Length: 112
Image: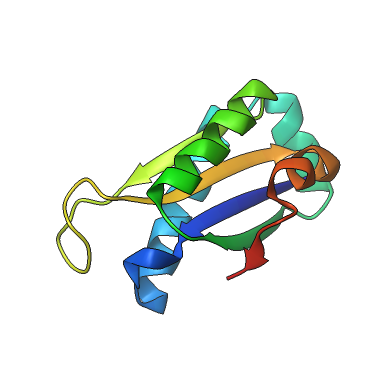
């Protein structure tokens, strides 16, 4: 099992900003997860992967694909206090879920 975080590369966020946005997504996904999934994921090492995507439209399309496959997701909207406009979608969090299920929808994306 793993969690995947898909970061918009078009926003040109700094490394620290990306880390903060991914952390927000990790917490939100964790809160949405079923207890059994959390126990299994934690027992397997709590794997996390950060990928990149070109823009908002592609990110929202990926979220729809995830939803159709019943993968839990979360969207992170930035407050706009530093590097991006208020309300900007920065990250899509997916999982935790089985590696194979997530790979079916994210396997084409590159590592951040």
